Each structure stands twice: as C-alpha cells, then as structure tokens.
Length: 206
Image (cartoon, rainbow, N blue to C red; front, side, top):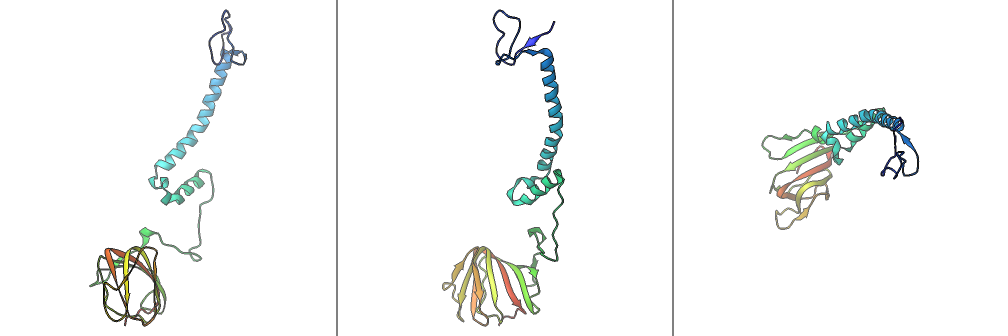
C-alpha cells in the first residue's frame, strides 16, 4: 500500500490521502527522493565550507582589518587565482616587524635606517624613538631636513637661546622643516616621540 503525505498541515478530515497546502499529492517515494537530493547537496557543499572555516580560524590575523591582505590571499588560494608578486626593483617595501632598531653607544635614542646613509652624500630616511623629556641644546644642520612626528609630542624652538617655555608642540602627523644653518633646539613630551627624518647627507651638526 502506498503511503501518502503532504508537506505541512494535518490530514484532510475523512480521508486517508494527504495533500500539500497547494493540493500536490506527496508519496513516500517523493519524500525519500527529496531527502536524498538534500543529502547529496550537503555532501557537495560541506567540504567547501570546511575549507573556508579552516582557512579563517587557522590564521587569526586574517580576521582583522590590519591583515586584510592575508584574507585576500587565502581567497585567491581557495579559488585558484595566481599568487600576488611585485618587482622589488620597481617598488621596495619593509613591514614593521622587518625594521631593525639600534641604540648608538652613549645614546638613549633608538634609530632605524630605512634608506641611505647619513654619513654619505645623498638622501637618507631614518626613524628615531626618543624617550620622555629628552632635549637638545641649540644647534644647526648644514643640509635641509624634514621631520614627521609619528607618535608622541615633539617640542621645537628656534634661536641660540635655550628656552623650554618658548616651544611649539607638534603631535602625530605634524611635519617640521629644518632650514640649513639655522639655529634651533627641540625636546620631547612626557610620552616621548617617534620621528621620521628625511634629509640629505652627510648629516653634519653645527
């Protein structure tokens, strides 16, 4: 005897036959076929979903906006796209964890050379971390310098007379332009400062 079902609702009163809400007759065979099709679809999608979940949770950094590039790279691998490569001779770069910080003998500042050599002629780029309340006495430089404040507070003054009260506070994002052979002095706030210097060498201090 063929058993018949409908998708939802209760059996029609006075009848052993059951219908769906749209009066479509469903047999037991129909339900078995639908169940098999759903299982087959699940078997196909489950491995893909598993790979996606594994790719995300095996690399926590890929879940943050800071490492958005990793998320793109994972997607490219999953979908068979080519890996991204750039010509380091055309455009070079250095990631934060690849910057080498050094402390010069007798100094408290930490410095990192990104490009060039301040002891030689030509442009150089240098990062400097200065501690809290570190000051220089009035001096000058024979070449131009551009200083960008990356973190903390950089206090700048001009002239041959040292005066902490006669300074301007430059915060993150601010830029200082040192004119050649002009006397100036500077210091840091209570949180110190991280500075980027772009200048022409040789770096000679007068």
